[in-house]
Structures are given as C-alpha cells and as structure tokens.
Length: 96
Length: 96
DNA sequence: TTGCTATTTTGCCAAATTGCCAAGTAGCTG
DNA sequence: CAGCTACTTGGCAATTTGGCAAAATAGCAA
Image 1 (cartoon, each protein chain N blue to C red):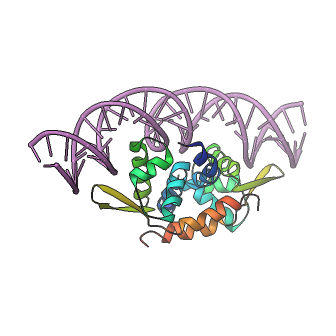
Image 2 (cartoon, each protein chain N blue to C red):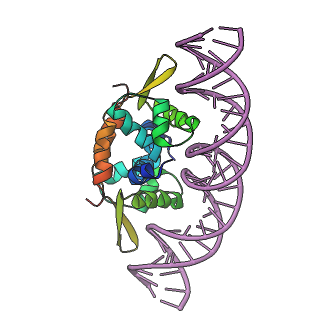
Image 3 (spheres, rainbow over the protein chains, first blue to last red):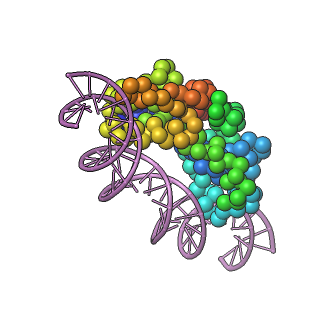
C-alpha cells in the first residue's frame, strides 16, 4: 500500500478497527450511559476479566475511552462521545 | 461473550471492522467522490489488483459498497454514504 | 506486615487477517 | 475461435487477534 494512504488513514482506521468487535462496541455503548468499573463490565459481558481488560485497553489506545483510578478500581469513561452517533449510520444505514 | 451482546452488536461491529483498515477506508472515501473501476483504484492504492479486489469484496459484504459490471470492468460505488460523516468524528473527535 | 479485591500483564494456542502469486472467470475484439 | 483486458478466487506464509489461565501489580483494611 502507498505510504501516503497509510499516513492519511491509519489513525482513523484504527478507531474503526477498535469498534469492530461486538464486545468492544458493547463496552463503548455501555460507557456511553455511565462511567463503569471493569468488574461491573465483566459481569455484563460474561468473558474472563482479563479479556475484558484487554478489550478496554484497545479502546483506550484508539482514544475512544479513558480511565481513572478510584480506590482499588478503575473507572472507564467514554471519551469519544460521537461514537454513539456513528452507530445510527452503521446500524440503520444498511440498504440505504 | 454473552449471546445477547453478540446478537445486538455483531452486524454493526462488522461494518466498523470493514472500515478498520487504511486501504479499505481510503477506498470508501475515494468511492465517495465518484464511482470507480477496480483498475483505477488499484493504481491509486499501489497494491496488487487481487489485494484491492479482496478489500472491495470485504466492503461489499459489509454493505458499504456495491458494484455493477460495465463492459469488462466492474464499477464500484459507495452505497452507505453516511460513512463519509463517520470519519469526521473518528478523525477530529480524538482528544475531545 | 498479611490478606483481600480489582485490574493488568504474560504466556500460550487456535483462529482470523493480510498480501502476494497463480489460476480461473467474464467480456470485448478481431 | 484466439487473444486480450478486467476482475475474482484459491492457496500459501507471515502476522495479528481473541480468549483463557496464571502471575504480577496496585490499593485498601485489619
């Protein structure tokens, strides 16, 4: 692939890629409702906590969420709020 | 992962996943400007034509583009136009 | 300190993705 | 028909991803 394309689209593609997994998309939506600790998210998702933690770190690396420590738990927060709007297109846009 | 999450978010995640590659994101943007044949897209991307064709088929499977035959070439077209709007969020939203 | 809870990191392995090449398919032209 | 162009598909190796379990890290409380 040409370097110029890589340069122009990599960062943006990384954000889409991070949302391109059902669990991570769910996590983003859930965090859109309220800030939540990993333990609670783990309960909702049903995967091993290490797996959920890894998904969250992918979302954080993409700049979609961030986190703060509160006592002995880490509270995640949806940083890129417009992700919630994107879904409308991706979900209902098919066929249009 | 819980089946309910899989059911609710898989289709939408698949669309994001399809856009989660620099080349495919570029292709979607390019097709947003005008309908284009594979040969021309190949020239822009710089990958083997088979690679570009495969990327396009991923986009088509996700419902993002479609195609029509015109003589001996295949013209691709951006079907899910709102993809162009998504990018604004993904590109400029970082840090907000 | 020890123990407990919450989270991340590491190791491991199966599965998926990426990209090239070669082969196959489809339409045009002579 | 043969030969050409345009595109897709199959196969392969290299790389990445996804998920679990175990080990490591961090903070709280006794």
